[in-house]
Image (cartoon, rainbow, N blue to C red; front, top):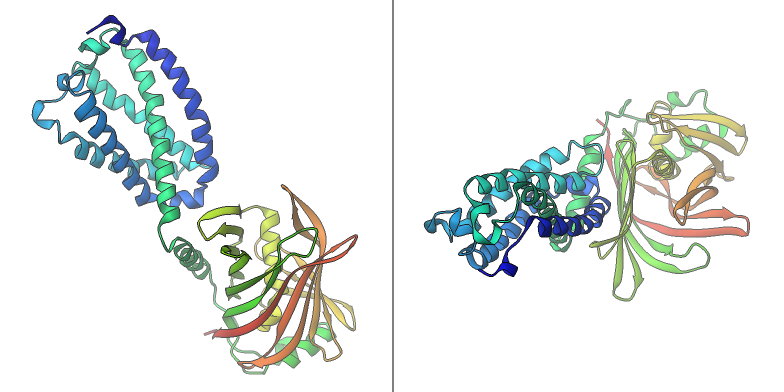
Length: 434
């Protein structure tokens, strides 16, 4: 073999620096694009992706291109065509182990997954060196230190490919959004608590502010089962602009549980001909979630966790309580404070989260508006406390409850109200307590 065809330690150290520079943004990208919640769902996708990547690597480089020059000195001849499936199975199993270990990390599990993949190269390459890998002419001028170090960064690159392939497979497999919805709602139901008492009793109304008592007597029937869960379907329009009127039609399916308070709003917004954005707006087990995804495949917004998001989502639950009014009774987490003869302030507590809203009642005693003075509004990458108003009208009886069929919500900006949601309740089904 000619001198120029041989690798050297110096060449490998330089290659290590180059690969490290490539790895750095790839690992950061994996951490950013595959958050902990998504990573947890990729278990088998990662195993499959690792099997594919290493089957291809060993099939192309190990069994074909470099068999005679390198690997024939390390492996017996009979194993040549067995190496691709063997390493596919081995690294598929490694992916399951790395997935389990990475999930223990407090942050960035996808990044830790890639780093663990890099470290596993030390075992394989150490065995290869012991079996004569660096005695072949191509590598005889390479030191063990340079070979092992390069191998770590080389494998980090491969495991970044594994993460990217797994995420792509998850994204493109049909039914991904629906599976995510099912998982989210399973978490929601898993956090539910017993609703007590199981039926409405007007004796509970003693001591409430007068407009609240009048409202609850108007919309409830004594002896009716308390609402444990509500399934709501809306149609309407959503304003897609923060500065002007760009209304787009939507349909939505919502599951709400009254104890522990939580909901998932699963919507479809037609942003343009042929472009549908799917949205989850949710409060589950004390955590807020907002996710918007083009076609349910490509995320354009993905927010999860944090005190401000949780507060805003629990505030939405409280504001929408006129659709499941037994949640406003004493003993359901809400406390009432009298304001005047037509309004009262409600505070809903769930752990450390306790938003408050001002409820205003119309001449018939029904909720006409709900208002917050400081709901978090996303402006660019920041959250700005902003006055917010919800309006209800068009009340009708549904399954023994008097509920509004029409509603609108708006930000109250210095230049005037900016409505962004208008909807009509087209279907509601209640799950009774007990």
